[in-house]
Length: 447
Image 1 (tube, helix red, strand yellow):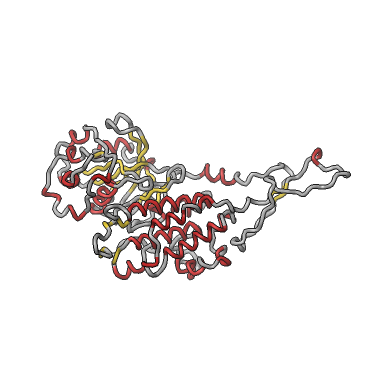
Image 2: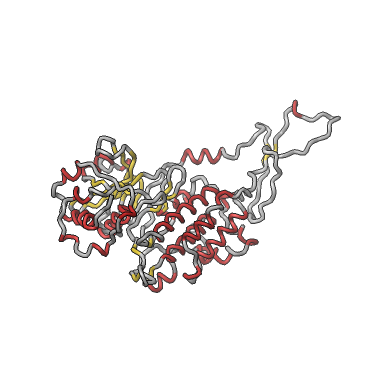
C-alpha cells in the first residue's frame, strides 16, 4: 500500500487540533503498511508549515502502521501512570510499563508496552517527539525498536513502544550487581546494533542516528538489540552534499571529535560512536567514568592506543569475563574498534563493512574452558594399587590452556570434599534471579 506524502504531513498537523473528532479517530481500526520501501519517506524539512493543514487524523493514518491513542486510553494501559509501573526516565521524560488488552483496539494484539511521556520541563521537546514519530513511524527493521503508536492531546506528547524486557545495554553491562554478559552475547549485541545502523545509513533516504550509545540500545528477552530514541536523528546528506551542518548534539564520550569541532554531521559520526560502544563491550567500562583515576576517566584516550597491541590487549579486557572470551575474536573486535574510532573520518569503515567483520566473531570456538575443577574420587572410585594411575582431568575431559590475552587475572583451583562436581553457573543463576527487568530508557541523559 502506498502512503501519500500529504497524508503523513496531515497526520502530524492534526496534533495541533487535538479535540477534533477524537473519538472517531481512536475507534477506527488502523491498517498496516507491509512494505515501507514503496513510498518516499517524509522528513522534518517537509513540515515547514504543518499547521496550515487540517485533514482528519483517522484519514491520515489510513495507510500507516501507527495507532493513535487517547490520553485516557494510556492512563488505563499504565494504571494511571502508577509508580509501580515506572521503569525509568531519560532526557525525553518518564517511562511506564503498560499492557494493551486485545479489546482496547481492533487489530491491535494484547501485549506489554512501554509508554514514554514527554517531560515539558525536560531536555527534549515537541520537535524531538515529532522527529521520533516521523522516523520510527516509517522505518521498520528487526534491529530498530517498534513504535506502536502515539498520543497528542493539547500539550501532552506520548509515545508507545514495544516492551523490551531486558532494558538497555547500559544497565546490563554496567550495573554493579548484574550477571556479566558472556562474550558471545556481547558480540551478538554488537552485530545486531551494527545491522541497525547499516540499515539507516543505506536507506534510500539515509538517516544519521547521531546519538548511538549504550543506553539507547535496548535488549529483547533473548538479547536481540534494537536502537531506540530517535529524537536527535537527522536526514543524511543527499546528492553531491558531503555532510549535514547542524548544531552539536549528542552525548559526551560518544560524539565524534570532528563533529564536536565543526558541527559537520556524516554517517562516519555514527561509526565513531559505534566504535566507542564496541570498546565498552570489550572493556566493561563506561565511555566516561569520573570515579576512575584521572588518566582512565576517558575510555577512548586510555584504551585506544592498546587496541592494536595483542600483547597488551588482555590488560583492558573486562575482568568480569574471567578470561572466557575468544582470543581471535577479541583481537579482531579490538582492531575494528580502533579503526572505527580513527581520528580521520575517511579511514573509518562503513557500517556494512563492520557487519561483515562482526558476523563470524560470535561463533568463534577458541574460548578457554571454565575454571579448573578437581573431582575427589569416592572410596569405590579409588584406583587399585596394582592398576596404573590415570591422569586427572577436568569434568569435561579437556586440559585447560592458559589464555594468551588474559594477563593478570588469576585462576583459582577449587577442591571440594562435599560434592564431586562444582557448577560454576550457580552464582550466575542467583544473580539473574535477583535482577529486575531494566527500563526501556535509563536515567542517563539523552543529550
